[in-house]
Amino acid sequence: MKKITILSIALLISAATLEYPKVGLQLRAIGQTPTPQTPTPQPPIIQPQIPQPPTTQPPTPQTPTPQTPTPQPKAEDPKKLGYVSPEFAERFSQQQIDQINANVETLLLTQSCVRCDLRAIKLVNIRLKNAIVTGADLSDASLSGSTFEISDFVNTNMARTDLSGAQLIGARISNTNLRKANLTGTNLDGADLRFCDLRDANLSNANLRNANIDGASIDRASMAGTTMPDGRKN
Image 1 (tube, rainbow, N blue to C red):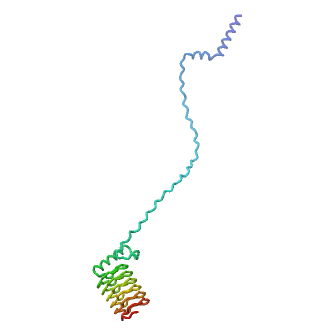
Image 2: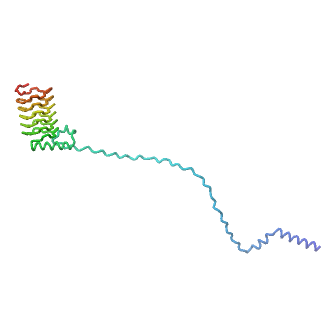
């Protein structure tokens, strides 16, 4: 009976040891300071890069830049015409006008301006005696009512010149271009008009008494009321 009891106790102890092996460990662990556990470093997690489609920027609307108008050159100041008739001003540059005016001043001061440019000048009712303008260009000039006694206009261009009512007594006007000139009522008594070109000129009521018109061309010239060299009146 005692053997059985001892054997039974031994088996119970053995079983308890097998069943609860960790109990002793846990009991031994009580009262001990736990050893801190150093965390194992983890490798960084690399996230795969997903390629992003390129972002298309909508075009920025362009605001049109206002165009500053190019400044246009101002119209030239009115020309200083001096003796030049306004209706002919557009024909000449200011430099030409200045030269013509200088020539007129020379003529008025010295009564001589040989081969001068006197185009389109306006010298109304002036008086010059023994003036010399040989070879000058007086085309389109306005000399109405002026006096040029015994003056020299030989080889002068006086086409379309207005000499209406002018006094050209004894003037030398040979070989002069007087085409389409206005000689209405002009006094040419004793003037030398040899070989002048008087075609289409207006000689109405002009005085040609004692004038020499040998070789002059008077085709289509208006001669109504003109006093001819012999004193005969048309």
